[in-house]
Length: 146
Image 1 (cartoon, rainbow, N blue to C red):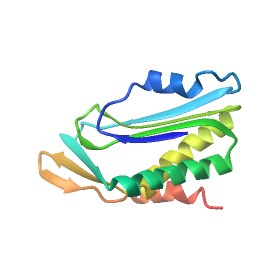
Image 2: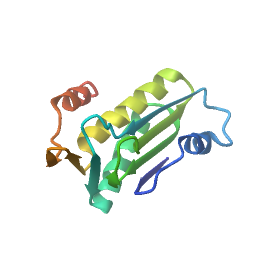
Image 3: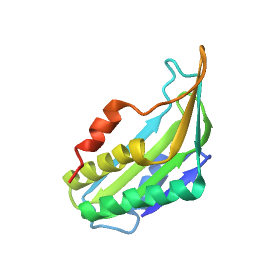
Image 4: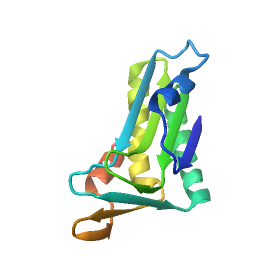
Protein backbone atom coordinates (compact mmCIF):
# COMPACT_ATOMS: atom_id res chain seq x y z
CA UNK A 1 0.00 0.00 0.00
CA UNK A 2 1.80 3.08 -1.17
CA UNK A 3 0.87 6.71 -1.60
CA UNK A 4 3.00 9.20 -3.53
CA UNK A 5 2.62 12.91 -4.08
CA UNK A 6 4.97 14.04 -6.80
CA UNK A 7 5.63 16.47 -9.62
CA UNK A 8 6.92 13.78 -11.98
CA UNK A 9 4.70 11.89 -14.40
CA UNK A 10 4.12 8.17 -13.84
CA UNK A 11 3.96 5.05 -15.99
CA UNK A 12 0.54 3.44 -15.47
CA UNK A 13 1.61 0.03 -16.77
CA UNK A 14 4.71 -0.06 -14.60
CA UNK A 15 2.71 0.97 -11.52
CA UNK A 16 0.10 -1.75 -12.06
CA UNK A 17 2.82 -4.32 -12.73
CA UNK A 18 4.52 -3.34 -9.46
CA UNK A 19 1.19 -3.54 -7.61
CA UNK A 20 0.69 -7.16 -8.65
CA UNK A 21 4.33 -8.33 -8.79
CA UNK A 22 4.89 -11.65 -7.08
CA UNK A 23 1.21 -12.15 -6.25
CA UNK A 24 -1.04 -14.81 -7.71
CA UNK A 25 -3.86 -14.18 -5.22
CA UNK A 26 -5.37 -11.19 -7.01
CA UNK A 27 -8.18 -12.00 -9.40
CA UNK A 28 -8.90 -8.36 -10.17
CA UNK A 29 -7.13 -5.06 -10.63
CA UNK A 30 -9.17 -1.88 -11.00
CA UNK A 31 -7.60 1.45 -11.80
CA UNK A 32 -8.48 5.05 -12.51
CA UNK A 33 -6.29 7.63 -14.19
CA UNK A 34 -7.36 11.28 -14.09
CA UNK A 35 -6.05 13.67 -16.74
CA UNK A 36 -6.22 17.43 -17.29
CA UNK A 37 -9.06 18.31 -19.67
CA UNK A 38 -8.04 20.79 -22.32
CA UNK A 39 -11.36 21.98 -23.67
CA UNK A 40 -11.37 25.19 -21.61
CA UNK A 41 -8.23 24.85 -19.49
CA UNK A 42 -4.79 25.94 -20.69
CA UNK A 43 -3.05 24.65 -17.55
CA UNK A 44 -3.80 23.57 -13.99
CA UNK A 45 -1.63 24.08 -10.92
CA UNK A 46 -2.09 21.85 -7.89
CA UNK A 47 -0.77 22.94 -4.51
CA UNK A 48 -0.72 21.17 -1.14
CA UNK A 49 0.85 20.99 2.31
CA UNK A 50 3.03 17.85 2.08
CA UNK A 51 2.69 16.34 5.57
CA UNK A 52 -1.04 17.07 5.79
CA UNK A 53 -1.75 15.73 2.31
CA UNK A 54 0.24 12.51 2.77
CA UNK A 55 -1.53 11.87 6.08
CA UNK A 56 -4.97 12.43 4.50
CA UNK A 57 -4.24 10.12 1.56
CA UNK A 58 -2.91 7.39 3.85
CA UNK A 59 -6.07 7.67 5.98
CA UNK A 60 -8.26 7.30 2.88
CA UNK A 61 -6.35 4.17 1.83
CA UNK A 62 -6.55 2.77 5.38
CA UNK A 63 -10.33 3.22 5.34
CA UNK A 64 -10.57 1.39 2.01
CA UNK A 65 -8.52 -1.46 3.50
CA UNK A 66 -10.95 -1.64 6.44
CA UNK A 67 -13.96 -1.81 4.13
CA UNK A 68 -12.71 -4.29 1.52
CA UNK A 69 -10.39 -7.28 1.38
CA UNK A 70 -7.62 -5.81 -0.76
CA UNK A 71 -4.20 -7.16 -1.65
CA UNK A 72 -2.69 -3.90 -2.81
CA UNK A 73 -3.38 -0.20 -3.28
CA UNK A 74 -1.32 2.35 -5.20
CA UNK A 75 -2.19 6.05 -5.20
CA UNK A 76 -0.17 8.70 -7.02
CA UNK A 77 -1.27 12.33 -7.06
CA UNK A 78 0.72 14.91 -8.95
CA UNK A 79 1.28 18.51 -7.90
CA UNK A 80 2.69 21.51 -9.72
CA UNK A 81 1.75 22.93 -13.10
CA UNK A 82 0.09 20.45 -15.46
CA UNK A 83 -1.00 20.87 -19.07
CA UNK A 84 -3.99 19.43 -20.95
CA UNK A 85 -3.54 15.70 -21.41
CA UNK A 86 -1.14 15.36 -18.45
CA UNK A 87 -1.94 12.65 -15.92
CA UNK A 88 -3.01 14.01 -12.52
CA UNK A 89 -3.87 10.96 -10.45
CA UNK A 90 -3.63 7.18 -10.41
CA UNK A 91 -5.64 4.93 -8.13
CA UNK A 92 -4.99 1.20 -8.58
CA UNK A 93 -6.41 -1.56 -6.38
CA UNK A 94 -5.98 -5.33 -6.40
CA UNK A 95 -8.33 -7.82 -4.78
CA UNK A 96 -9.63 -11.36 -5.15
CA UNK A 97 -12.75 -10.23 -6.97
CA UNK A 98 -13.78 -7.37 -9.24
CA UNK A 99 -16.58 -6.07 -7.01
CA UNK A 100 -14.18 -5.19 -4.19
CA UNK A 101 -11.57 -3.79 -6.58
CA UNK A 102 -14.08 -1.57 -8.41
CA UNK A 103 -15.74 -0.36 -5.20
CA UNK A 104 -12.47 0.40 -3.41
CA UNK A 105 -11.06 2.24 -6.44
CA UNK A 106 -14.18 4.37 -6.71
CA UNK A 107 -14.28 4.98 -2.95
CA UNK A 108 -10.66 6.16 -2.88
CA UNK A 109 -11.22 8.47 -5.85
CA UNK A 110 -14.41 9.95 -4.36
CA UNK A 111 -12.58 10.67 -1.11
CA UNK A 112 -9.57 12.12 -2.93
CA UNK A 113 -11.83 14.55 -4.80
CA UNK A 114 -13.48 15.82 -1.62
CA UNK A 115 -11.27 15.14 1.40
CA UNK A 116 -7.66 15.41 0.23
CA UNK A 117 -6.17 18.87 0.86
CA UNK A 118 -5.21 19.90 -2.66
CA UNK A 119 -5.84 23.36 -4.07
CA UNK A 120 -6.38 23.65 -7.82
CA UNK A 121 -5.92 26.77 -9.90
CA UNK A 122 -6.99 26.71 -13.53
CA UNK A 123 -5.57 28.92 -16.25
CA UNK A 124 -8.11 29.73 -18.95
CA UNK A 125 -8.38 32.24 -21.78
CA UNK A 126 -10.39 34.42 -19.38
CA UNK A 127 -7.67 34.32 -16.70
CA UNK A 128 -6.73 32.29 -13.67
CA UNK A 129 -9.19 31.00 -11.05
CA UNK A 130 -9.21 28.71 -8.02
CA UNK A 131 -11.46 25.68 -8.42
CA UNK A 132 -14.28 25.33 -5.90
CA UNK A 133 -15.66 22.02 -4.67
CA UNK A 134 -18.46 20.62 -6.80
CA UNK A 135 -21.79 19.48 -5.40
CA UNK A 136 -21.63 16.37 -7.60
CA UNK A 137 -18.40 15.33 -5.85
CA UNK A 138 -20.04 15.77 -2.44
CA UNK A 139 -23.03 13.70 -3.63
CA UNK A 140 -20.69 10.90 -4.74
CA UNK A 141 -19.06 10.93 -1.31
CA UNK A 142 -22.38 10.68 0.55
CA UNK A 143 -23.12 7.23 -0.85
CA UNK A 144 -20.18 5.82 1.15
CA UNK A 145 -21.65 6.94 4.50
CA UNK A 146 -22.03 4.11 6.96
